[in-house]
Length: 212
Image (tube, rainbow, N blue to C red):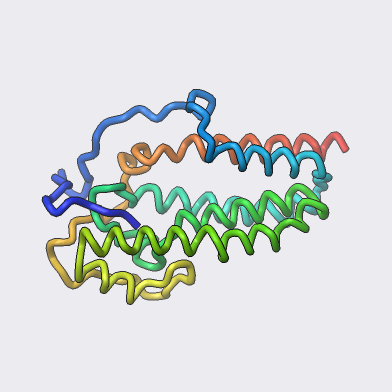
């Protein structure tokens, strides 16, 4: 979900949102932050216990690819801090990026073998008991503050993670949002760095399984 100022923030050329041009930096050029240290620690622990096999890869890779697909789809519709994003996957669930990330993480744990896969219950507990409730509360307050009744209608109609079959459409005509997937949005959201990290993890696991 995204928040936006009251003034219109998108000046569309057709259906393409006009976003601030920014060249995404490769993953290795991003400055490390404290919030990025715990994923590195968890990744190191998973690598320590990893025993990938062709069978574990066959079970986990489809889930990873599904999660990547959802994130790519969502990143092309998400306009951060500008509008209430309700198109694409956001018409079916409020947190497609989180859902995609969860699928990727579970898939990678399965790929890494039976011992890392034992951490899936801990991952689910941390996600559903701590991370998601905190993000849900904060983001819901923000979009209601910025978008009022339109945001309340969206929150009431669209589930957080369980996709609704019929896409939700706003009744208000003044809710600006990109109507189709946008490469500009995708680039603006710096999704390439995450895709690079996932590709690197999969490459290492495949190489490990082949050598074993």
